[in-house]
Image: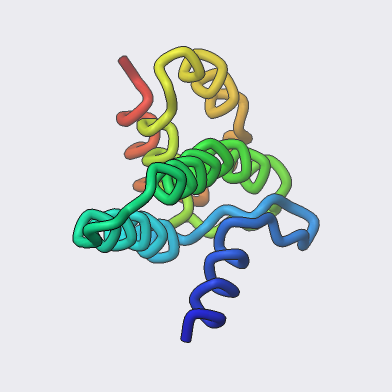
Length: 133
């Protein structure tokens, strides 16, 4: 069972190259966030948790969070027919960025093709609402 979980973690946190960066679906993103929460709760329940274990989990989550936005931007820049639901992941990953990265991220979102507003009107409007100050 641990091997399956490790394989799924690797698959969810790495890029899959099909001509574009991998942007997770909302369900995959939510599952990954739940994974981090459950793992942290499990660590807190252990009486002998080490700082290195907690640090490793922190770094794993930070790496995932830092890679999601750029991967999703690349996904939307390179996919001719992107999955509209993934705009929710882009919006969420934008919100989770450090404040210092948001200016650049916002300009990247603004540079996305206008076909997204036609193909995914509701999700695109939601994205615009989430990034507008």
